[in-house]
Length: 345
Length: 234
Ligand SMILES: [Zn+2]
Image (cartoon, rainbow over all chains, first blue to last red):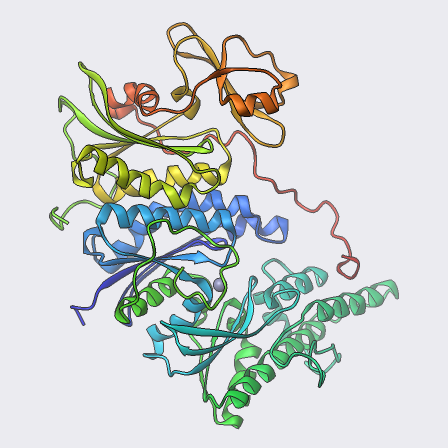
C-alpha cells in the first residue's frame, strides 16, 4: 500500500474549500473550510463571496490536510482538482492553485469531473466500486442518475433534473416553512415528527410518457408553497412537521423509484448514492428498503463524504492514476458545465 | 524534488535577508494581458529582467498562466528550484482573473518555501508622473495617480470616467481608453520591471511584506432579500 501514489485533491466548485489526501483507497486527510455561514442571509450561495473565501482558505486548508496526514508537500505524487461542473469563479481558484502546486512540485495534474468524484469517494469507505454501478447524485447543485461502467474511463448520464436541483427544492421549501438555510438538515429534523402521508404532494415526471430517469422538483416546490400559503391565507396554523415529512417523502419516493428502475432496466445490481441530499435520513431509509426488495446492493458514503470535499477529488485522482489515465493538458481551465462523460478535464 | 522532507510547511522564507541578489518570479493577471517574468534583483544592483511573457489571455488566465511561467523559466534556462521569491499583482482588476494570479503566487511560494510579495498592479504600469487607467468593466475604470518620483499619490480607486478628473499624462491600454474614455492615452501595460519596482521596498525589507489580499475595491454583488416573496410566484 505504501508504494501506491499519494494523491492530493482540491475541491472549490461551490462554497466548500476542500483538500483531501488519499493513497490507493485509503483516506488520509479531508480538510474543509466552508463559507456557508456567509451565504445564509442571502438564502443561497453567492458566487463572489464563495470565490473570495476560497482564495483565503486555499493554502491554509492545504496545510491542514498535510498536517492531518502527517505528510509534507514533497510527499505528494499527483494532484487532482475539480475542473467542473460548478461555479466558474469558484472553480478557477482551485484549478489555478492545483496547477501551481503541480508546477512547483513537478508532479502530474488531473482536472476531474465533480460528479464522478462524488461516486469515487465511496471507494474510500467500501472499497473498489462494483462496475457497472448506477449512481444517484443529489445535492443543492446537481440531481443526476448515472450509469458507471468504468469510473476511470466511461460514465454515462441517464437522467438529470430538468429544472431545480433536489437540494434547491429543500432550500426553497425550508424558506416557505420559516426554517433556516441550507434547508436539508432542518427539514429532515422537522419531518421526524410529521406524517409523510399527511399531504399528497405531486411526484414530478413519473407519468408513463415522461422521461424515465429525468427529475423535476419545480412543480413540487410550487405545490408545497401554494399549500402553505392557502393555509396562511385562511388564518390556519401550518403543520410544519407534516409538510416537511410529506415533501421529503415525495422527493425520496421519486429519487429512489427512478434509481431502482435504472438498475433494473440496465441489469445493474449496485447503486451508489452521493451528494449532500444523500445525507437525508428518509432518502437513505427508502433507498435501503427498495434496494433490498429489488436485490440491489446499496452503497452510501457517510454524510460527511456525501457533501462536497477534497477527499472525493483525491479519490477519483487516485483511481485515474491507478488506471494509467494521462494527466490533463498544461492549459487546463475550468468548465462550469463540464459534461459527465468527460471524467478527466 | 531535491529538498529534504523535513522542510516546514508554512510560508517561511528559506533565503537569507543578506543575500546579495534574489531570483524573482513576477506575475500579474489584473488586466486582459497576463504577465509572467523572471528578474534578478539586488538592493545595490537593482533589477535585471531575464525573461518576460505578456500573453493576451482575455479571460483565460487560469489556462495560460502556468504555461507562461514554464515558458519564462525555459527562456532563461532556469528551473523552479532556482527561484527565491514571487511577486504578484494584487489588482485592482476583474475579480475572477485577478484571483488566478494571486492564488498561483501563493501556491507556488507555499510549495517551494519562497517569499511572496503582493503589489498594486497599477503601480507596475508606466513610469514617472502619470495617471494609470485600466478596465473595471461596468463602464467604470480603475485608476491611480503618480508623482514625478513615480510614487503613488492617489488611488487605487474605481469610478465612472465622467465623475473624475484624470491628471495628464494618462496611460493605459489605448484601445480600451478610446472605447471607455473616448480619448487617446499613452500606451503602457504591466511589466516585470514595473512589478519589481513596486516590490522593491518589500524585497529590501522582508518584514514589511503584507498579506496577499486582492485589491477588490468593490463589495461582492449580493443583496440580501429585503422581503421574501412567495415562492409560488417566483
Ligand atoms: Zn457536489
